[in-house]
Length: 361
Image 1: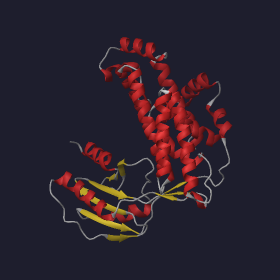
Image 2: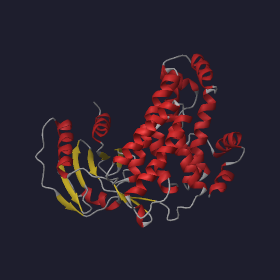
Image 3: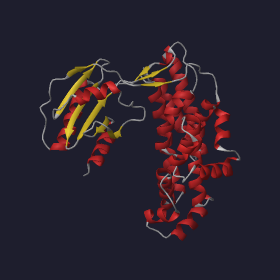
Image 4: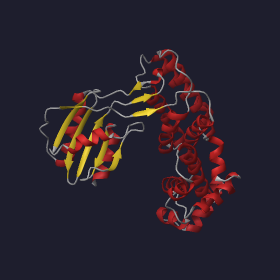
């Protein structure tokens, strides 16, 4: 099994955040939970000092780090303690694995790679902190906050977990389900219930039967009321959204033939590199004409229309939530130049990318 597949499966099974660095200590791949932070410069500097086959560190913020040197790579397992920052009552620390559990996972990963158990070194102290995800100090409604919420709910409607996780970071920074009240558990529960209500409506719009959606909502709200603590409100509400997405995903798989759903998934994952519909048909191992006919019949849209809409939706997100130029965004989305993006953007939105950005900036 290739290293990438092995690490992906290990992360999927354990939720341990894994980062892979090359010999120049450049990050080449990561397998992480949606809200996991990136390594900061201080952490990278200390990683460079390690040349042992396996090393463990305890950090001053009570998180822990394991480093395995494998082939030409440093594989880093990070049991991180990150914080959502903003107003004082927005600080939320992620729940951590115990150190013994973490060291056991690192040992298991080592055995998976080398087929032998390691002699774990004594943990070394390391001065560093988990990265922060900032939120706005002013929680008043804004265009950015409205769009962040709308995009998040759109991902629920689509049953697209990957898109949802990407959008959740933007939502944390620009929108919110409400305001915390003196940092109390009751306030957190009320906000979690508010989030559940939004997810329920989005799931119904996405095709989840009304009875199933409200039954699921009732079960989740009962669980929220039973919980005695919510140590990480943001991950808590993200996980609730993931439950609804999985239900919508299964519903959509029932309503569309397998080939059309796979075509949509392929487009969403590769919209920037697809040059023509023949590539999609080749990936699915069917004829282009049959794919085009079936796609139009089941979705009411042509393949080209679906691809263009996906690109423009991505362009909207980048125009609002990044400072990239229109030209940079065009290349990110696979367009040959800025003019091609502007033409397609105006065709679908009736305005130029710059005019669209000015509405929200």
